[in-house]
Length: 70
Image (tube, rainbow, N blue to C red):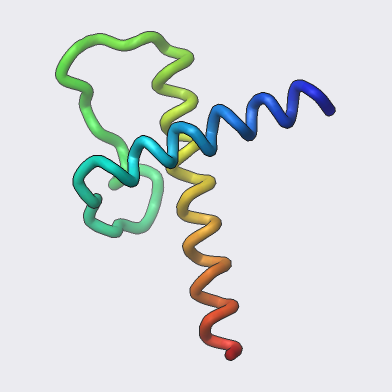
């Protein structure tokens, strides 16, 4: 459980840092969300970014559903 919390904290930190950068255009599907990095990054960083993007999409969808029910 300790490792899961640490992993979620990393994802939350990555999402928080993404909020300060320029907003992304909302897209659907996994193929449209891929970006080519300007410089080579570690494979782990790339995987973490993909996971963070998916988590952010899930959170946005959940928030939209909650707001629609209200």
